[in-house]
Image (tube, rainbow, N blue to C red; front, side, top):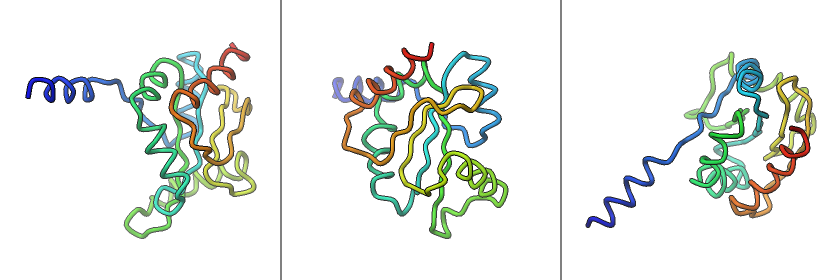
Length: 146
């Protein structure tokens, strides 16, 4: 019982990075904190690889621990289900982002962007990377640009 309690406390004590949905806010935070932005284009309720990437990487303790220290996270979601419908304002924001950063309409697409909006790296699809493998790819981009 004590072991289970310790595991639960450890899990809930892990830092969790907040995903922003506003690009201007993400750029401001990236500038203020001298971090890069990880922009994820997802179809949260219809895109199987998007759901897998979120479940296997973005929701992992390893990724969240790394992201808190190193990234500003931004999500542009394009759900299809009525129950997951976004506000009209958020739909417009996401479509504006897609018109610049995801013109092909691919899902999932993950971009590493600097605070000025310059794309430094694009990852298209999800290739069953472990959180550690995904973080290693991000570190390579960060190391090359800081």
